[in-house]
Image (cartoon, rainbow, N blue to C red; front, side, top):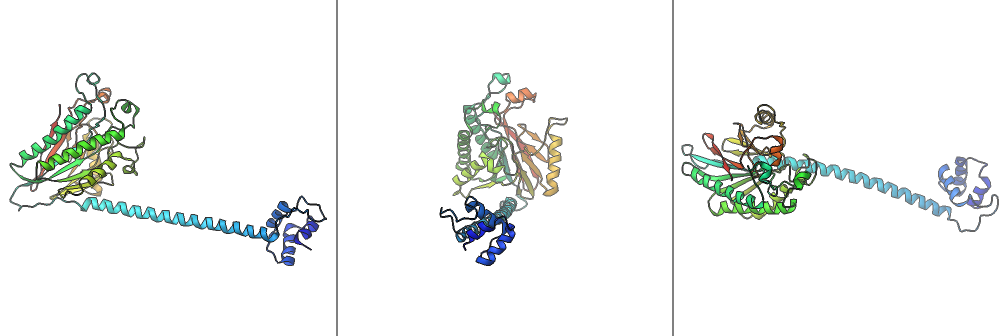
Length: 392
């Protein structure tokens, strides 16, 4: 008697568990109650009870069993693959954390400006802050009551004036002290981007074209310094909060979504064969640069909270500097973001290239001319001079 006929004759007489036990004993199979009931429903339920099986060439029990076992093997394989994926993902995250830690250490240790002369001779490093150019944003005279105007033509003229002024000031300093190195800190917000609708409606270029435009200005300016001096350039780079691909700010993945971070790497590749140029493209919010026995901390500035309270920027800046100093101490913080030149002793806030605009007017901010900051660190006396380069 076949399994199918035996099953048809005994369905309803015994439980599915008992039927499976009997069939396994008689036919050397390995059914359980559920799998036997499933087989019955798929193949035998519509046949005549007690009669011969309808000749529809139903699948053999052995074939069904093989298929079930194949499904089980595939399921087990899928679970194994998923476990391997999770293990690989965990390992990758671990490697990325180690990489981030290594990059952070490299930010601290890879570049250091050391003295070259004996202690009795004056030696200095000039530090230049460049940030908040907002190169593609238009500012109309009427929107600022005639106080400021800005467009691509003016932006290019100011960028040219900036690099010319930087070099001229450095040459003046070199009359009294030896200067071999210029630190050109690129602190972000070189483009306005499209994160705010009102800004996007008031720009001459889209984000990518604006990036290409400002990249050309920066590369030309750096080359101008190289061609007209013997200075070595150390260039710390930080992303701003405007030139990003996401609407909301993301601190953990800020660089991954930053147009400027990409631009810095393109620029570094452009100058990769020049031994006088060293880019420091930070992977973290802050970076550190030892200059002689002093340490400068660089960042864009958007990590600080300032609501325009009494005391202005000074109180929140001092608090933020103190918190960072709990981790690693710096002698001076350099940042931008707030579009105002402020020298707080332990910090220097850079001005902006764009200057006064409609947003500043609407918020009641005090007027400030477009300006960027230059200061000097002398080997024995620390920071000795800071001044803005102002633009028309």
